Image (cartoon, rainbow, N blue to C red; front, top):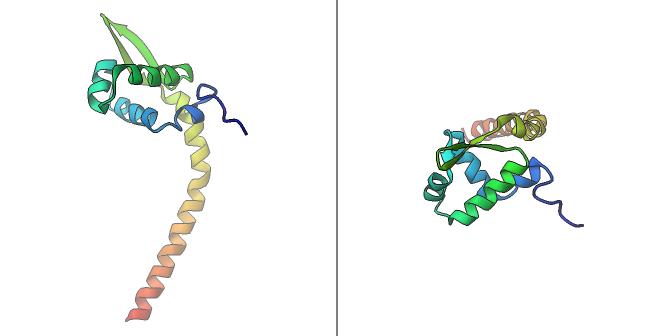
Length: 111
């Protein structure tokens, strides 16, 4: 089965680890391409390519500040990912509670 284009939706765009790193950097605040290049240790064309993909799905927004382009996270575009992951939170919590119970039983058996 062919993989969907990375610009098809936010899920596909953030599937790439470098794009997630860019989003992590932008969570601290607005950054220029040059700042991102320095922080990530990537070449400028690579950073620009990833920013273009993130911009096309709406995950980042850009504005001009003098001769620089400054990027920031668009949280609203990431909400579908949050909503999808949140559905699994209850399951994870229940499983961790069960694991805690098993660990407590094992501790009691050792005594």
